[in-house]
Structure formats: C-alpha cells, structure tokens
Image (tube, rainbow over all chains, first blue to last red; front, side, top):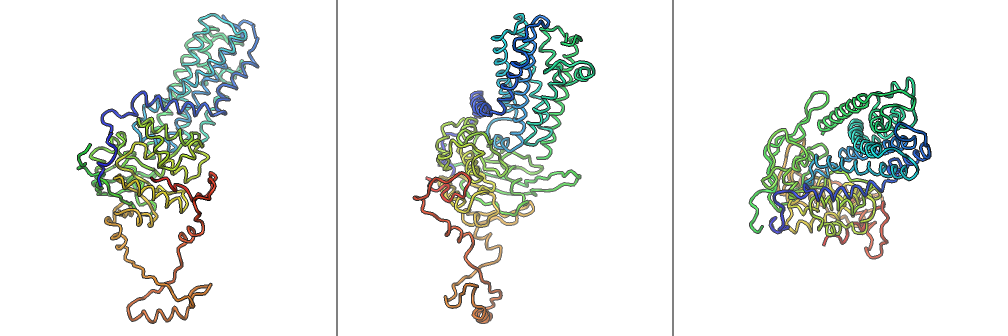
Length: 266
Length: 308
C-alpha cells in the first residue's frame, strides 16, 4: 500500500493558512474566546467604565476647551484601552511559549502573520472600552468641541498600541503563566504615576512625567487641555511626545531581547 | 495524483543537532543519524528518555534547525511539507489553549489549514464527539492527547509523526488508541512514532529504530531488533498441585532446575501474569452498560468504536 491511496486534493502553491480569510477565521474564534474571559472583560471594560461613573459623571467644571467629565472620560478610556492591549498581547506571548505556538507551527500560519493577527485583535478589543466609555460620556454630559472628541478618541485608541509592545515585553521577559497578571497589575501603578486616575502634584508629578502612561495620557488629553494639568502646571507638546517615543523604544528593545532569549533556549 | 510517489517519506543524512549549554559546553542530542522511511511504512522510534527522539522529531517537523546534515520530507524541506499539510504530528511538548472548547480547538487549526470540511470527520475519528463542547481545561490528560491526535489528522497528512502519543492515557485507552492508528495505517498513511513502551513498538510497528545517546544503534524489522536484545523466554505452566498462594513450591522448582541443568539452562525464573494483563482483566467492562464517563476518571471505553 502506498501514499497514493490518500486524499487526492493535495494543496499546491500558496498555502491556505496564509490567506487573509484563514487568518480572519482564526481571529474570529480567538476573539470569541477572549470575549468569554469575564475577568479580562471586567478589567478592560467594567472597571474603567465604573471609575468614570464614580469620578467623572456630572462634573461640569471647565477643563480647557472641555469639561471635567470629559477630561475623566478620556483618562478612563485610555486606562481601559491599555489594559486591553496589554492583556491581549501578553497572552499572545504566553501562547507562543506555552506549546500552542508549536501547535500553530505545524500549520501554514507564519509567525509574522500571527503577530499581525494578534495586534489587530488587541486593537479591536481596545476599541470596546473606548467606544463604551465615550458613549456613556456623551450620554451623561461630557462636553467639548468636536475636534476634542475626535482627536482624543483617535489618540487613545491608536496610542494604546504602545502597550501591546509593553505586554509583549513583560511576558517575553518573565515567561510564566502569571506574567499577564504582572503586566496588568503594573498598569494600575503606572496609571496612578501617569496622572491617569487622580491629579498628582509636586514630587510625585515630577517623577510621574517619566513613567510610560504619562506621555500617552497627556497626549490623549492635549486636544482639551493644551498641556495644562489640573494642578496648574504646563507641559509643552514635545514632553509627552518624547515620553511616548522613548518608552516605545525601551519596550521594543526588551521585547526583542526576550524573543531572542527564547529562541536560544529552544 | 495517481502515479506512485517515488520519493521517500523521510530521508535524513548525517542529521546532527547539538546544543550549547549555559556553561559553554556543547551537548550533541542527535549525532549523525541516517534514516530513510518509505511511504506507507510504520516505524517505531524506541529509546530511553534523552536518547534524542524528540529532537529528531522536531527536526523532521522543521521546528528545530539541524546543526549538521540534511533532512527532507517527501523531497521537500520539512517546513514546506508542514505548510502543505503533507506531514503533521502529535507532539509531546505541544500545548492546547485551556479556554477553547474541544470543537473550537479543532476549528482553529482546521481554518488555518483551509480544511474546515474535515472538522466533523476528525472529531469523530478521535472519539471526541461527546466532548465537543467541553472546555479543554476540563478534559483529562488522555482526552487532551486525543484532541492533539485529532489536530494532527486535520490536514489529512501523508506522514504522521507521533511523539509519545499515549502519554496520560490509561492502559485500555492506550490500546484503543493503537487500534485507531492501525485502522489509519491501513489507508496507507506513513506513521513514525517515538515511544519508550517496548510493547507499543512490538505490537504496532513493522520496523523499529532503536536510539541511544543520539545515535541509531539498531534499525530493522521489529522482530529482529527484539532478537538483537539477546533474550528469548520459554514459559510453561506448572502443575496445579505445586502452586500455592505464596508462590511455586521451592522443592519442585529445585527439581526443575536439576532436570534442566544437563540441557545448559542456567537461570530458572518464576514470573506471574503481567500487571497490565491483570489490570485489563479486572477493569474491562461491557461497553454497553457503561454510563458516560466523568471527565477526569479512568476511561476504559475511551476511543472504543472510534476507529471506523
């Protein structure tokens, strides 16, 4: 008996798993799996929405060209978005190192396509808290100019990609099952230092300016505040931009180092 | 494709893999292995842990790059054969995602192979239909192993590589698994499996490759490899009146020894029925009156009726 009795339909040429349809099909299954994770969804959507309601709802005092409700809304949407990208990217790193990556390596899917797919997935999940919290804000009296709304939402959403790199970096560096938890936990601390939850002042603010969430959150609020903080200090535009660029490079370097280290061990 | 495939399923020449340890020394896991497997063959890779079986399998699948020599699968680089779905595997170190269901796991791999049409058949073949909606983390080790087997069947490969495929299965599940594989082999699939259970090689593979310290020390028909070990066992049943609860009557044994000594027989040994046989005899149940097994218990009916 020879192999000729086997399936007549051998695929030749372009492997099916490299087609956009196959990758989209996998992404849909993966998205459904992640959406079922109630704990993750609570931290990504529930907690930031709750905090907006507690801290921001109905605060109509002015904050730059908007009101305080909108200022808090942008901050909490940013917190939800980075929690999403950190979680999705971090668990992607764990999946690759925990054996599922070997399972995927036996399919036509290439590592770069996997990375692109997971990045897309992280951005889709990040859009959920942004959309929801902006919708709650719009319905409950957050107000600002049209460009405030559009620009801040865009920066919150697009900028959260930086924290996908952060999630990858932490999880590739620690490589244990709880490294996603570590990465998300550190986000909470960095959110305090980064002036995301409550207005900081003095020494803490001086230190906070150098932490990863500060630049991103300050940029997202820049359309409203023109750089003024609630405690009356002012940041020139280059400061949050430099912060974001510096941390992008740091996280990317750590992620690359973690990736190489993993390959050496085999 | 109706012409016979002239290419060997596997051709490895001088295949070598060495690793550098953190202290700077190198370890050669696979050492100049030459191996050719023809389409349709069933080959067992036998050897103790650390013999280089898994590293060899990794190179066959393109998961590890050899440090020396070459390996081709159906005349192609392993990575290309994998992408084309010609070779797949049940890996010892392959992992599953705990929060996918059994069915979703199969669907995820099937969609990447562009073979969504195979989902139902593969689930059926691996006996997973009753567990399809169960989360992977709620499955027992043996059930997860069957799921990995299902994933390996998804691309309908010409060559299937199994690395310790029955790990985590109890004795009867293991037998049922090999039953399923035997049915599969009958369709002409080439099967290469690594194991450290001698029995599995003995019962299932026509050819056995014996590995030790990264080298092939024996390669031939399984019966010959078994003979190369040297020992043959002659067994006979003693008369009932000399067998007591605490063993065979030592006086009678001594007389047997004396009687056999002129024939050159030296070591007369007493053994009882194997534990495995005893276990099977004691746990075998009639398949018709067994309730659906709970998820994490020994599952004597696992895979029964799956291979068809």
